[in-house]
Image (cartoon, rainbow, N blue to C red; front, side, top):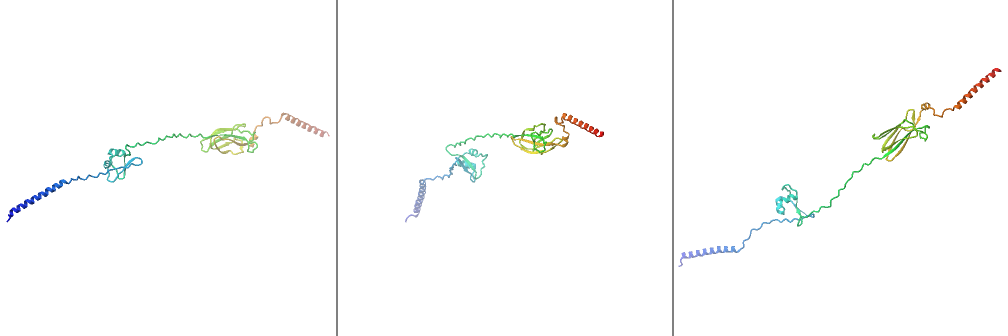
Length: 272
């Protein structure tokens, strides 16, 4: 008979050896398989596309910060602030941030031609034109209201010239003789010309006249008046227009002769 105690001891030793072999094999197999490294974190790569003008623009997204944009694009915070005139780090979603200009070196923007300043000279104020006006107050001897060349000026008539705005007022007195009264350099515009006839005369024409002067005009106005009956009666007899002394003497002689003939004829009748 086999000794059972010795059999069980041998089986236990074999089981122990088998377990050790399994553990050792597992360890050796683990060493044979290469150890895998931990997976690397996926870092997004920003590849900006410049615009037609060479400007590289980044549109701010939700949850973006200026620091995250700086880390993503590689543009420093200071440069981001300077390029976009930022006083702090506050940005909003949808905002356009300038990152720089395209090219291996920053593109130099060539300014266009400098516009030539046009000197605008002040428009000179044109002096208003002037006109000339001559006036005569004639003695309308025949009363036809039309001046004849032989009809002289009536002295001491009052002339008045005023413009519509009241800024011009000219006066003068009419002379005697055949001369008219002239006004030089009257400013162009609308005027009223009036004349007052002296005492002892009655006007034969209008005494007020509205007229518009333009630069370079030369105007002549005739105003007529006629002496009243009282003035004519008191007017002195012009020299050379009285009776001739010889005719006066002859008239006296004829008168004496007539008286003498009358007396002689009366005596003849008494003698009969």
